[in-house]
Length: 221
Length: 256
Ligand SMILES: Nc1ncnc2c1ncn2[C@@H]1O[C@H](COP(=O)(O)OP(=O)(O)O)[C@@H](O)[C@H]1O
Ligand SMILES: [Mg+2]
Image 1 (cartoon, each protein chain N blue to C red):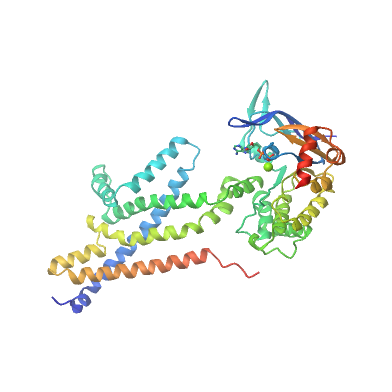
Image 2 (cartoon, chains in turn brown, yellow):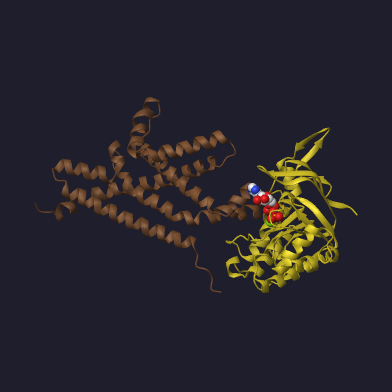
């Protein structure tokens, strides 16, 4: 069997349209995961012991169960609770929750990397808690977290394919559809793989840029 | 003399370790007190209690006429509120052995941050104040330098300026020259000596360098196991101690 570049060319517009959905799902899912992770890590640092325990459980839960299971749960269980969301919205929420747990873990490591002396200096200068976080702790805690968050973004590019399971018309879903219509899977699936590769490389390059920006070269002495 | 610091029957434990045991201590306003004593005797804890970095278990600590940790309510005592702690913290500044400068801020930003964020001065006003303080500690040419670009002695002088920027009545120095190479001790000591000529400023200085003690102290207190064993003017406590434990401690530090 011959690999048909003509076919690839023919289906490319459809695939690129689906790629837009993939990119959208990645971006929205990523932003949600950053926010959800921040909420989780904040709850894990509250004075209330039960709240901390709950947040820790939620984090472990989302990391220990498959994304697909979480996706199905949201997709099939939420409607029966009267909450009806589009597949896309359901999908990005699942991505946000699942990867938010990983983001929380990354934030936690970043926060713990800030030496105790920094907190004590801020307190001795009579900074408020909020001011301490904004001006002292986060500027030191976040830069080392950028690579870990970048890995989350890259993993999410690929994992958007799972959203095809709930009929989100992203890249994998469309490639599969074309395959089943034409009884020819090789070209659409190969083309989709190449597009994922390009997306991942672009994401990696972006992360690299951001990481460099966050680690400014020290001024020459 | 008006006392600015008063410890009355203060007890502080870490688990089973009793660090301060029914401890009494009075410092007069403007007094420069140097605390010496073996490692683990509770000197840092004493300063950290005053900086509100450590809570006490019982007793009274008064700073500038106000209760620090507990207030008397009739016959009972109650822990103070967070806003009262903030009010009390404004009276005290602290300089640490490891400097604890903010690494992502320039020298100027380190010093200006307190006036700006805490005293709510304008950016221009805070930076002008920071600049004049940095000049005062001899770092007028390092305003834009990040801590990583400064020597230990320079970093410690920035830290002193940073604490002074909030105009505390009491300055606490916890082994501020101990992490420095010997040739850098002098420049920090010079700044502290200049500061000690400010009559109104109360200074509490923990050190194991007797040169520092001699240069700064009105009174030297020898501390052991959370107790004041001996105190007096430096020429008495350092050169002619009465208590045998002070004598053996001093013999040991003078050998190093
Ligand atoms: N955070 C802490 N937790 C437990 N023990 C502590 C803590 N801080 C100090 N200690 C103990 O309290 C005692 C006094 O310590 P410290 O005040 O640092 O002494 P010094 O400054 O005189 O060397 C020591 O035995 C030390 O181990
Ligand atoms: Mg100490």
